[in-house]
Image (cartoon, rainbow, N blue to C red; front, side, top):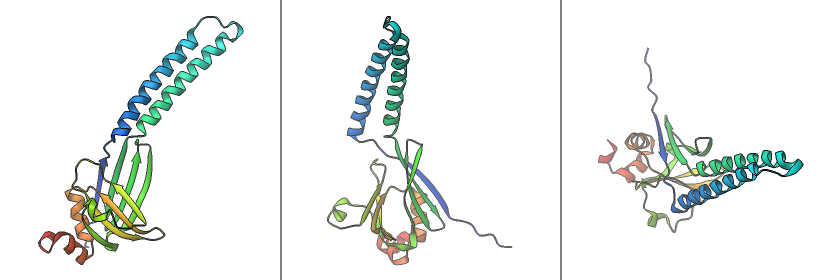
Length: 188
């Protein structure tokens, strides 16, 4: 009895926050802290007659709501990409704050029309029906693939594979696409 071995690779890459996202996190944190303190002060101010306990309740409720909203928005900037290769099937998922997953791409590597090291200037003037940038932003090297996705057209995917993932990509690419990307000696 002969057992076949599946080819499998799963890679998780954390996306680097942009400067705008970092500034937004700081501003959101400061605003949330100010609102929380303001609502707590509102809640504990004595008096208010018959409405005193109502102000206390709503003040604490608003403080908790402001804290949760700030947490939700700030953690929403934590984005990861997951590349999964299973027997030639290539999936790219976007994971937001480890609570929401969105499938960006699901294709067969044998359907790639082009593949190689990504150079922005080489793709700036080209027209793609869809572009998926799923790289972490840590300096690369970045790779690209061009594939025709049913219902979405010609798609450019840019990603940042590790050696294991790249090795499996090479294994399942069409032979000529792999030779164009890696040369004849680079396929071994």
